Structure formats: structure tokens, C-alpha cells
Length: 354
Image 1 (cartoon, rainbow, N blue to C red):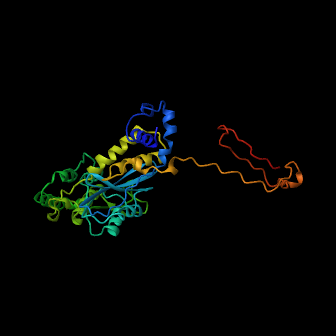
Image 2 (image 1 turned 60 degrees about the vertical axis):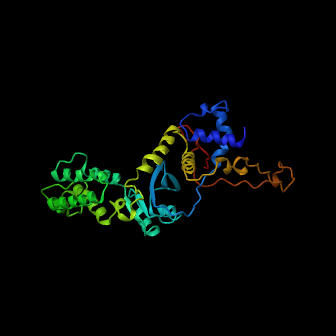
Image 3 (image 1 turned 90 degrees about the vertical axis):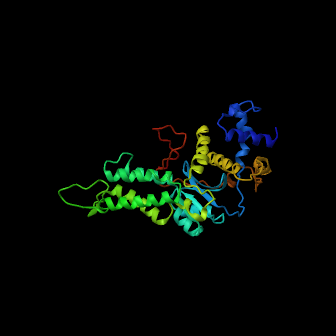
């Protein structure tokens, strides 16, 4: 079987949901792993084209101790970046590869705002409305007890039903009305006294705190995003006809969902193999990927040659004690150690120096 066929079978298994034993022409799963082991050495990468996109969606997915930051434009992946966690430096490394688009759609993850300010300062930002809804529900719960909480939750749920500038203006008016009616709850403070215990989340040296902290956080989130103009970017007149997305559902429900399906089907793989599976999926879903066989290089499947032993510098009989290095005398305190094969609960003595 050719290397091309082996790589094709490898990718068919890696990006599918079947087991290795189901792959034809290899006999057993062990034979499949042995003959396709070299395929893990291929690291696909999407070359930068310099194209300026109307809109780009960005998001991250965690794989073990790694995080993969992904950028897509339309229906195609344009790049990814591995990092330990979402942060400014990692986002900047990804965004710096592409020219600034007209609009970027993001869920507002950690570090993204600072990276956008540095790399794509002229790009309009659209916050994912689904994530905004989730954040509001996290603060208020799905069943708030107060009338103020119920009214604010209804405003949050209405975000994804807005499709015209008139509806957006009406929603902003309702948010302002809510503050006029319930603003005193947002501003209310509680001062520490000896008679009343403080909530568990209050610091020991804190003299006062906002009485309705979670209600305040939910309102402040909506207020901050509305003032920044990132809630209804998709409805701006300058973007008419571009079909700007209001959510990151295309990358969340499309790309990320498929990646999680692949990883779940092949659970048990090492982190390095999980990363390679993600890279292959993203590469093959770019706009113009090369055929996988075109990425094959001889060094990927050629085993490393064994290094020859260095020639001996002396032909003296090794039994001659005169040519042997002097034996170091044991000194110092007793030293104990463990080996990896020592049974649990037992100590293996590596050396004993009285």
C-alpha cells in the first residue's frame, strides 16, 4: 500500500467516528497503528492569503491543558493558534496574521479586547448575543425572585429576537426605562455592622458592598455593551447587505461542535494526537486546502538511522585495572530513592553510604 493510501485511511479514521479495526486493508487495529504511525508527523498549516474579509468570527476550544484559538470567515477556517489559555498575547499572535476585517464577532473572552485594540483597532466589534444572554442568566438565574430581576431577564432574552434598527432602538429605550424604575437597587449599598453578618463573598476588611450585587452586574453588562455600541453592530447601515452575524453560532455550533464529536469518538488519545486531529479538521475546512498527499515528505516516514558507536580511543585490555577510572570512595549521609517500578508502599534502596 502506498503512502498516499495509508494517509488517506489514517485521515478517514481520524476525522470519523469509527474504530481502527473497521479500517479495511490493514487486517487488525495493531497493523493499522503500526503502518500509519508516521502520519502523526505531518503538521498541516493554512497559509495566509492577505485577503480582507467582511466579517471574521473568533472563538477558542480547550483540549486538555491546551487551548486552540480559531478564526473563520464565512464557511471556511482561516487560521488557528495554540496556547495554554485565552490571553492577549495568544490572540494577538492569531489576529496579526490577517488584515483587519470590517467586523469581528466574538464572545468577549479573556484578553480579546486588548488584542483587538492593538491589532484590529479600526474593526467594528459585534458581541455574540447568545453569550450575552447566558451571562445575564448566570447573574440573575433562570428564575429571579424580584420584579426587577424578572424584567431585566426578559430584556436579555429579547436580544436574539431583534432584527431591525427600530427594534434595537426600542430595546435600548426599555433598558433605560428599567434603570429609571429600578436604578435605586443598582446603587443600593449595605454597610458592615456588628449586628448583621456579612455575605460569604465579602472580604474581611470590606466596609460596604452593593446590596443587589448580581442584579447590578447583569445591568452593568448590558449598559456597558450598549454604550460601547457592540450589541447591534450587525444592524448598522454601513454594513447593509453584508449579512453580518449577531452570534458566534457558526463557529460554536459548526466547527467547535464537530471537533468535540471527533475528540469524543477517539477519547483516550494523547494531547498531542488530539491537537493533530484538530489541526487536520481545521486545515481540511479551509477555503483551498491542498490534497493531504501533497504534504507528505520523506523525513516524515523515514525512520531515524541508528547512530554508530564512537570508536574506542584505547585498545588496552578492559580487564587491565590500570586503564580503569579510579573508584570514588563512598562518603556522605545515607541516600534513599525510589524507582518507577517499585511497588506502592515499598521503598527501593538505590544506594547506601554508611
